[in-house]
Amino acid sequence: MYANILTIAGSDSGGGAGIQADLKAISATGAYGLSVITALTAQNTVGVDAIYPVAIDFLKQQMRTVARDIRFDAVKVGMLGTLEMIEAAAEFLETQSCPVVVDPVMVAKSGDRLLQADAISALRDVLIPQASVITPNLPEAADLLDVMEASDRDTMLAQARALLALGPQAVLLKGGHLSTKESPDLLMSESEAQWFDTARVATTNTHGTGCTLSSALASYLGQGDPVDVAVAKAKDYISGAIAAADQLNVGEGRGPVNHFWALWGNNG
Image (cartoon, rainbow, N blue to C red; front, top):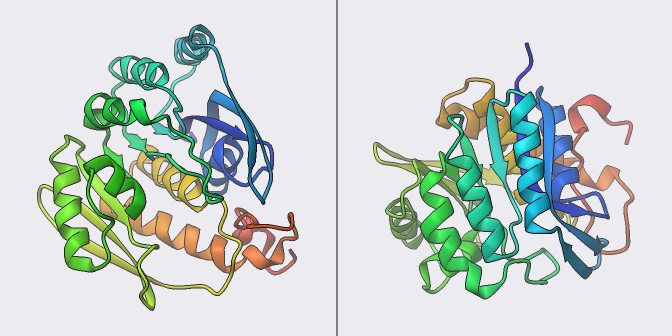
């Protein structure tokens, strides 16, 4: 039996991030993807032209309808653009008992803000405490903690501990924004801190990396892996997707990673 993984996130009309990236990553890592759409976006590899949030009643209906009929083994939560959406997702997750990965999506790669400012406190206080793992990058961590962005590993350690104090079971703090030779990610739990170092890949095609990593992580958790093993597998998967990104020819801006690099091999 394959695991069923539910993603609650926004749609990316360019196909590289959001729901589209989530479903690709879940499929590529061996699970079946289900989706609840929080917003429609008009975007491409250059930027986001418009965001159209779905009505709250319809968002709740999507979640209720999926849960009424289909068993799911993990949930990934991505873009929730408003306070009301965060509260609705948190209320829904209270009824579930599977692993939950929260990717606190706030700003797109293009720099467009995807989360309203008044929703950050709700994300921090209502949703994050329900997470098995949260996966912020350094700017998102700084926003959540209202501090300066980390610029070294020592500060990452301190901020990961502060994020853990918000209530999740674990924090995967992504260090891709550091100006270092490696791209270090830090897994922090009550019992340990573990670094995952990855060599940087010379490519600008990194659209959707956060969505892809968090969805792969949810997929592996839903398939029964412990958190550290799931993180290691998800890191290997996203590293391969980034390394093969230039096989794709999608748009004139920051293109997507290659979600199916292992399936397609070098035929992209």
